[in-house]
Length: 637
Image (cartoon, rainbow, N blue to C red):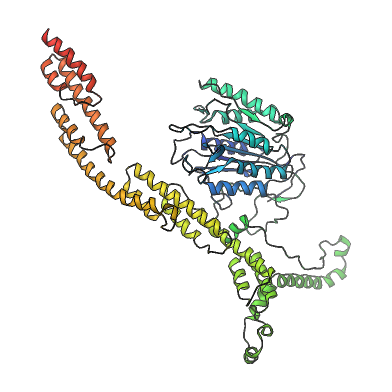
């Protein structure tokens, strides 16, 4: 289906919506993913925006262009670069939303990817400076003031006493001249709206976009602030107001969004909305856009094309322009029908010549690899350069390699250059490096695709894939850095399972951690010695708890006292200790309830005997002492 773009003074409006809810090592951020979904829904509902121009990266977002959008560090960095460096064009607008945790480390602010935690900075986090640098690249392409950063990242969690986030962001926003809206003023918490199931900031933004006061930053901020105040009042929350950061005051009056009256595209070039099956897509006239929730499997060629720089394009051969239209008077002439078969034959010949030219390198390689009767002895005695073998002629090998790169056959391109004997020229080495870079990028892309933060086995598979990048190859250092980072995540996952009492899972995950990562060798060995002992202790303590539960007899206080004695054999620091303590406290309350029941029925003597069975150090011990004093007075009085 082909549609005609309409002329518009403004460009396309792009959005990157990054929202994270379930951090494995931190409490849940309730509005994280919901904020990203809300922004994506806004782009879907508004005709002047367009769903295909909003990229969502959240806990459960679907792949796009065959690549994952799971919000780990690698995927966030890839998509920021892809949108800012490739998709945004002159006159476009770009909004970037970050909703999740942040942390300040060495006086620098970081946004936490889904694998992040305070003790994994910077390996599991993205420096805010890096994000501002990518947005600055988009600003250089789109125009000053056309890029806006939305932040809802001021979330506290219990036990964190680090420096507050914000000072570094304020400096970066002014340094890179990127207008920024923080979800809250300094000292205000970032709050969740139970009525909208998003953050208060996102609820205000959605309402303001539904009835915009204007298209500049000042109007947007005023609209968001008014609706946030109203939302806080409706939800009975403390006041939360946004904060705008700009380099110069005049930036407040620069347009940061498209007008609702503007069409969604600009220019006059036709573009294909939904290409029919088998219909060629003209990349020269196609408008860049993000396909929504594409689930097509990623291929080596597609991944390399998305990351690697495009290969050099050879100019097409000069061909005569065929006649495409005939006047009505000519079609009625007998001479026209006389020459029509010749014209068709000439057109077919031109098409065949074009096909031969495009595949000339591959055809030459095939013919040169064939042996014909009567020529073998002559070729054996001839020098390599005269025999016509592709490995001997570097120029032919380079041509074959370039042809293979254009077709996405990067391994074939490397092999063509490697067949050339002796020292390679600079041109041949450049072509080989280009093909090898694409291969390695494809390898790392496949390694990163399946990563989900909860499965150590997936990181192990990714490491095995990354090891295919050999020493001396392009991106080898990057592959090694990925291996070390993923190994660290695997060990952290193992430690998290151990804290939850899942020692079998912890041991299994730790055994998958590569033994050649020197930074982790000592810790890995220590934990693999420690956890089997704790697993054995856990099993013993579980048997103790089972024994204690079997002693319980409803209505018999002495059985609860005996069960408490058995459970107290589980010492502090041992597995199942907290479960044992919870059971002990519950059983002591059960004994106190029995004593109070007997006292209320006038059986003060039995009540005193029952209350005396409550051990010291339990939650019911203090109440039992007070009851015993009262009951003794009543009994003696």
